[in-house]
Image (tube, rainbow, N blue to C red; front, top):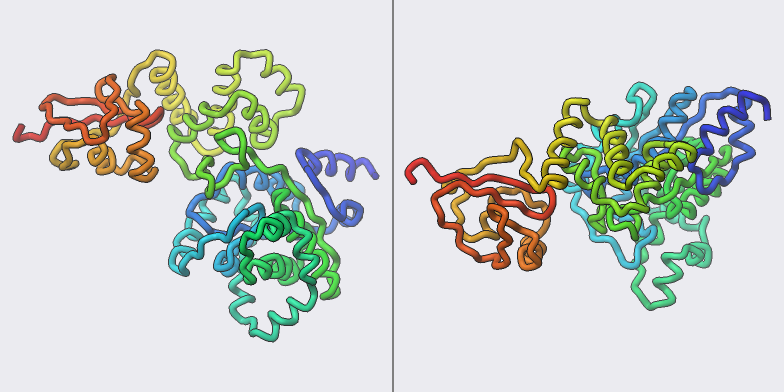
Length: 398
C-alpha cells in the first residue's frame, strides 16, 4: 500500500470487526475515486440510539475523507421487520407509525453526520413501483438453504419457532437496496453480515461492482449483557435530554464503559489504559462529559454534572426540578400522580413494581404502596428511580 492508502486504512479500519471485499475497497481508495457509502435504518421507533452512533462514527470518517454517505431510511422494509438477531417475528407497524418515526431520524443522524456530504433516500422510492413479477425475479436468485444458513433462521427452525415467509424476503430487499443505490460500501452491525453480503451477490447479478461490507461491533446496552436495542429497552437515544443521557451513562457497569470509550469516544488504547488507573466513577464521569459534548453545550453539561454529583454523591436534590400543582395532577394516590406528570416513560405495571421494590421516595421516605394517599397540604418532592425528580405544591385554594 502507498503511504496515503496506509493512513486512510488505519483510520477506516479502526474498531472494524469484519470486512468483506477489503482488496477491492483499497483499490478504489488508491484510485482516489469518490465512494458511495450506504447505511440503511428502519424507523421501528422514533429514536436512534448510541448503537447507531457506532456506525455513524465510521460514516463520519468516510465523509472526512471526501466520500458521499447514503443514509437510507427503510420506510418500506419496516413493513416487513428485519429478522436479524431475532428469536420471533417483529410486530407490524402501521404506515402512520412508520412515517412518524422516520420524521425524527434525520435530525438525530445529523448530530453526528455532515448534512452537506449526506444523500438521504427512502426505499419506498423503488419498492412501491415494483410488481409481483419483479419480486419473483428477486426470489429466484436465493435458495431456501442459503437463507437457512443465517443463525437466527437456523435457530428458529431447529426450535420449531415460526418463521413467517415474508421474513425471508427482508434480506432480498435489503440486498436490492444496494443495487438501486450502486453502493461501493455498506456499513452495519455484525448482525447484518448475511444481508449485506447478499447485496454483493445481487450487485454481481446486475453487473455492478460488488460493495465492500464493513461490520461494526454491536454496542452492549445499559444492562451490560445484551446488545443495545430499542426492543430490549436498554438503550440511550440520541435525542434524550442532557440529564437523562448523563444519568444513563453513569449507570453503566464499570466494565462496559471501556467499550463506550472505544466505540463512541474513539479513544485509543493508550488513553483507555490510563483511564483504567483512575477510580471508575472518575473515568465514567469523563466518559459522560466527552460523549455529551457531541450534543450539548458546555453550560448544559456542567449543570447536569453538578446535579448528578449533588444527587448521587451528596444524596441531595437537583437545583431545578419540574413543579406541579395538586390540582393540575388531580390525583391523590402515588402511582396515578406519577403517571399524570408524564415524566415516567415505562408502563404502569413497571411503575407499580418499582414502587413495591422501594424505588420511589416522597420527601426522602420510601413509599411501598402504589395506592398510598398523598393528601398533605405542604409541598413534597417525589423521586422515581434514580433520575426522575419533581415537586408537588398545594393548589392556590388550599
